[in-house]
Amino acid sequence: MSDLLERLRGRGWRMTAQRRVVAEVLAGDHVHLTADEVHARAVAKLPEISRATVYNTLGELVTLGEVLEVSTDKRAKRYDPNAHRPHHHLVCAQCGAIRDVHPTGNPMADLPDSERFGFTVSDVEVTYRGTCPNCAKA
Amino acid sequence: MSDLLERLRGRGWRMTAQRRVVAEVLAGDHVHLTADEVHARAVAKLPEISRATVYNTLGELVTLGEVLEVSTDKRAKRYDPNAHRPHHHLVCAQCGAIRDVHPTGNPMADLPDSERFGFTVSDVEVTYRGTCPNCAKA
DNA sequence: GACTTTAGTTGGACAAAGTCCAGTATAGCT
DNA sequence: AGCTATACTGGACTTTGTCCAACTAAAGTC
Ligand SMILES: [Mn+2]
Ligand SMILES: [Mn+2]
Ligand SMILES: [Zn+2]
Ligand SMILES: [Zn+2]
Image 1 (cartoon, chains in turn brown, purple, green, red):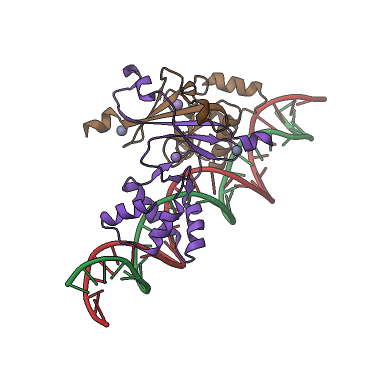
Image 2 (spheres, each protein chain N blue to C red; image 1 turned 135 degrees about the vertical axis):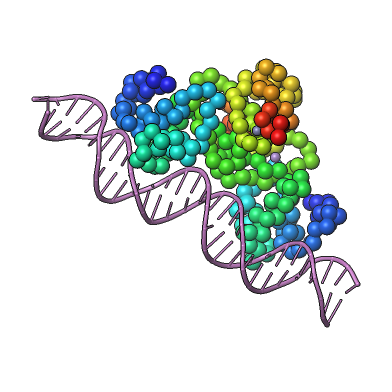
């Protein structure tokens, strides 16, 4: 995720301890944390980082296109650092676990003109729901 | 929507003025109101209905499978009385207008086993986003 | 390395969406 | 009409998120 920090520096971002920590927290695959989860993990590395800064930083990352907002459950927004490879999500209805998935096919093509109501359609979001292996055991 | 009231009576529901009003508010096609919108419209018909009752009633309708919760934007949940015909949604990114749509194809079939991570997948939700004719004009 | 500028951070107040509960009212039964 | 379980109410509380004025510090200049 230091690629990210490089790109951001290139865009005129001041490199602060807070931003570095948020970027660290967002590293990895299948990462879909809420703002408060990001804050909790950031605090573990930098105790006095504020909620407001986490919200600000996440918002900026979203604006810059480096992080996506996803709302797989109906509660808090989740922040997804996997912004550069298009993908969809598979969510466990019990525990909320989220995996990135790459379905075949093109759902855009499956919406006939007669079902577009004059809209200009620009994007599709697909969410698969089910039960994860862990929850299936219990 | 009086079919609904019949079914509910059959399930042992007491028929109260509040529940009748909530059911009335939910009548129609392409209806996707937030709880507070339902409350506002219910108040117009029955001034002293409380927010708590609206939330309770909507929750019960969801449990009974008579209404679906959808979260097309990242804000309040929306309540969808069109629970008996499977469908997906087309949302205007500007004004939030929502239409029910029925795409062709079967997105379930588009998720290969190798992309299921051991999950038992039971449901897919597809949200199309774009610009509605109204917002396109402006 | 100190100075300056200005972007970034902070904590707390505020707002919106939703839950919970103790007390009150009433639908439906007899 | 009277009884009782169910439903309703209003308010307190929680969670998620936004906003702001005062403070802090990154990065450029000397
Ligand atoms: Mn993702
Ligand atoms: Mn719908
Ligand atoms: Zn699970
Ligand atoms: Zn629109």
